[in-house]
Length: 114
Length: 109
Image 1: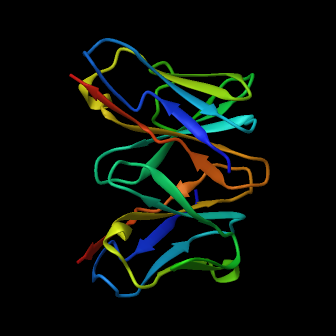
Image 2 (image 1 turned 90 degrees about the horizontal axis):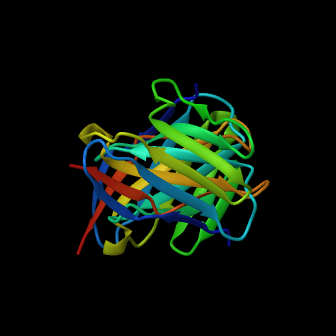
């Protein structure tokens, strides 16, 4: 079945630094990928839709200059959290869909900003 | 946007019991998926079921799209079934998914 690989699975960084998270579709091409964020004991909230070869679409309230998304190929999207602060600590999950099929999710990245 | 409501929010069962989880949604959908999130955060695809009924082992799901709800059945529950169950819907087959708040299931030995 379709596999979405996300890396790293866990990262701890100091306040003010930037962190890049990679999301790859391993055995299918994905023109669109989705980035979600999940705070403890809460549901998943969509942050942005990543479109191959064009700008990402951000949900209301998500700062596009803080959460930079690049979807440079049909199998790779990256999310960069710039100038991270403790309130950015969260679980970030990417997803991608095979044409006509279900959405598949990566294993997530747990970000802790100290 | 579309609203997704799941019930119950919490459910505690004894091993071997059966349960039904419900997902109501506010508008027509062309995509509905059920997930199980394990304690490590992994989202496991259970069913892709915009309509109809599917079964996979002890789990089955039914979506009645015209009445805007879906049900997830767990039979003969096991402790490994514990975790959060999410229903997520999309208005078109290629669109993003909107998640419900989840059902926290605890199965005790």
